[in-house]
Length: 392
Image (cartoon, rainbow, N blue to C red):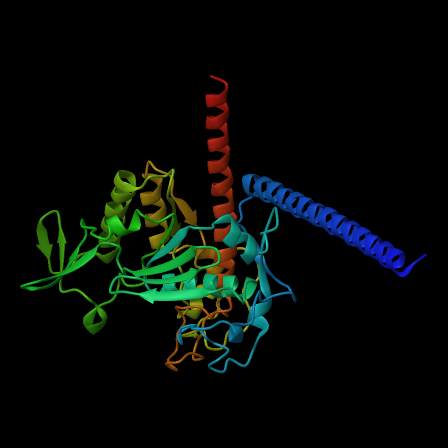
């Protein structure tokens, strides 16, 4: 065979190899896509089955060496109130506890799935610093899942936004200690229990997570209002639990009048407990959480639920539109060990907020499970409507 024949033969052979390899890669890629879809469908079916037959909020804390879900040192911009590891907390056992529902498993948080499933969505947290605590945990969980993602941070006078640009998912925090308005008037600062002016911002979100309670019993210099107004009457003060109920009722009326449930999913974060009174967890004499290293055993908290939880559930039961309660109170009461205590940027004793990484990661696992459930229901309704239209 001449030189040209050998070259032609080699060229044909090389071309054939490239074609075969291309076909192999294409087939392998297709099989991987099918496998991923099948795996996701299987997980989705399992999540749906578990959520429909299981109370995720009834359970206990179990030790799990695979926790925490991320290293807090790799998560940027954790507020100094919550960054216990950075500020010297020496024990790490509190990071390795997982919430175990009695009758099923809480799905492990999947940050990539979260971002893909809610691509293009705006998720807003509305409330006090515990809402920020909650949001920063979610931000850390997502950053750990996509560490190389392009993240943009923006702030204005009303709210702050963190956007995962590759997915178009925005996490937004809007500080509103009471949910209702505080306005400066000629006689001072007025807490208006029947006024909400931020509602036009709220209702444009895809997901809303509300929270209020921590500020309702503040007095003196820490109280950010001078008078209370309700039903066109002005009060120097009133029973704080009654004021809390009236403000929640105003918020509930806003939900029923302004929220479009086909566009916006609404959550209320349950009452987050503090741990300053040891008799509540059968350790009389303790005046803070500083010595606590382990969660409580079992599923019940000796003191029981706070009164605010019953008020919240009463108001929620009267709302006509769907509102999901993230019922985190009892499972958080059991975590007397999960507060920053003195390991924070202020060095004061903090048994109100929670370490990040830590307990709020479980709140977000529950949020992930609840959002998935709502996403599935909404998709099923759309599919049902589409099928009805096709058959008519």
